[in-house]
Length: 130
Image 1 (cartoon, rainbow, N blue to C red):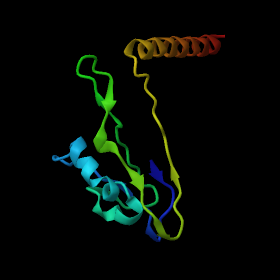
Image 2 (cartoon, one colour; image 1 turned 45 degrees about the vertical axis):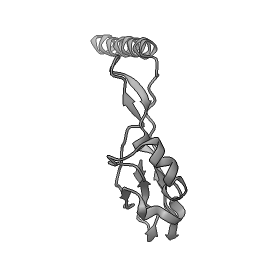
Image 3 (cartoon, rainbow, N blue to C red; image 1 turned 90 degrees about the vertical axis):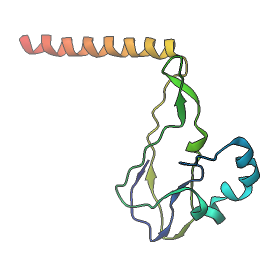
Image 4 (cartoon, rainbow, N blue to C red; image 1 turned 60 degrees about the vertical axis):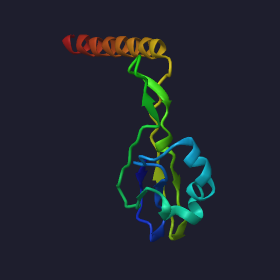
């Protein structure tokens, strides 16, 4: 996510559970109303990113599956949300990187992508030889 402008006041992105060694489903359920109510409890989050033009933040939403080394379960620490813009406006750009959760399907896609790219490169090389 990239902030496209400076915000006069507010507009942070908050991660309530980031870097929380005590996180558990039970603790989350107990604190749910305040932890995820970022409109009123933005600065109670464990990590708060202040918007600034050009600042980019990247995070993983999933853990790595220990068996496959691929996409695993959702990472509960990645829960996040936007805080209220108090003054000014906020523009962001999101860039989602999708990964198939089935390893074999992702590898098949990767193989086709690489083959197609190789074909395009070879065609380009061949056209310059003429």
